[in-house]
Length: 308
Image (cartoon, rainbow, N blue to C red; front, side, top):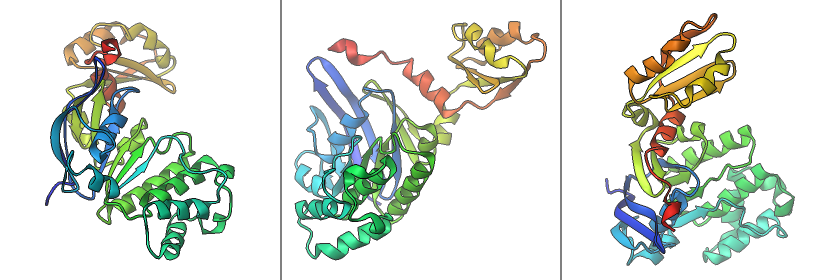
């Protein structure tokens, strides 16, 4: 099967700052690939390079069978892009927004296509409601409906569930997987670890560099991190004593328990050794979490803001 996306050595610079630094990425059709990383890490810029909205300063590859540079116009026609900020017209109704989006894409026989989109996203009963009066979750559905109205082969979602409630997030992800099942390739940037785990695969970018790639389980398994969990009365209060200890990458309270991790099992065990005798506290080895891995990776790469 031909990859939907196959890019190599992507570079994008703004002045002296390298925002995307030799990124390689291959994604097969119908896969949901999550982009994760700190703010300013180059996630959005990478998405825009892939879909033809930006031209790379270096690198090459294909997207949807088109050359990344020569085929930019063709790539954009086959891409749906949902921006982080709601980008539709708040003084138009749901239906009017979709009809306007359809006109932009030159969709023939538009009315049945809009009707189908309204039905699929559960918007039919609200179709005459102004977009500006919608809650965050309903705006999210409308934005997604507008993105897929022209039946794209690639869907780019830039932090699409920021500020919506857990049920709306779950409904959204159910729809994303339903779209992927039809063969649409989805790239989504997110800060939510539970959303990352719902992706088929993830790509972690920190300050322009691609640091990890694979499924969530693969990224955790290859991280080399060790972890311990402390439980018992006051375990969470031990975090300040461990955060700066040698061998500790992170020490965070989760309710009444404490989660500690680091890259060297021996150094980590030595760091917690003085606290093992604390009355009422039990220590157990644990699996590192995806969040542990990302914090560890982020600390390995300097913030490229200094380049500017």
